[in-house]
Image (cartoon, rainbow, N blue to C red):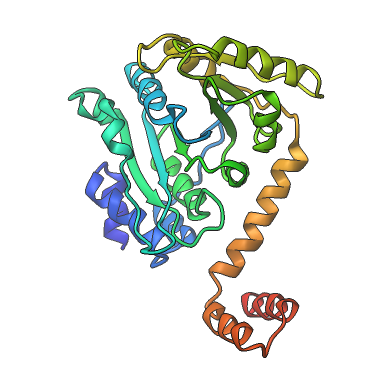
Length: 301
């Protein structure tokens, strides 16, 4: 594993992919990897991880392709972790985000972009918690920014607050009024909002409703931009704005709530005795409170 990590540090993408797979499969943990890397992630004045979320069909992947193209043209090295939902029946995932990414076909720009697809597996939310470790590893290797594209599954999207420095919410026209957007539970966490497909009717109206909704709240109003990923309209401007995006600070408590819940969930899912506890719960020999206490004691050991 040490040779594998060192090869990844030297730029070998196959070794990088294999190391990320080892992290995802829990055959190595972040602490072991960082001991090999030998240097912590350097803090910067800009964000290092950005979560892009929004409902299915609003054009997140196509918009992201345009953003990555602009950033690569500016000589930034950006890694993308694209999350796809796992089937609850078969456990498989399509992992088809690469299909929409034209930037990886460019012989020059593709060297500045790294794309990794990730399945949600057993994660309760739309972002598996191991993504946080994968993000730290990529940053330690010298990638300038890490972008996380979430599943796009409504209220479960708030989990991205647990792993990203900034959150971008992508909306689209004909998505209902501002109340519908509020119901998704995302606007309070968003540092920026992009209304994509601005070439379609209703986009400007939806953007105006979102701005009005923010003005009724407290804290700094996040920027609300209009883009058309299909035609490239507004994409360069959005890419420039996002690079220097500041935290809206609208709900720091909500962010830390999600991070606390995610940490608690991770302790449960990564417990070596989880299967035994589930069996006892299934036969009724243990209560949920007892299960939590039991897993906590196991983790302390």
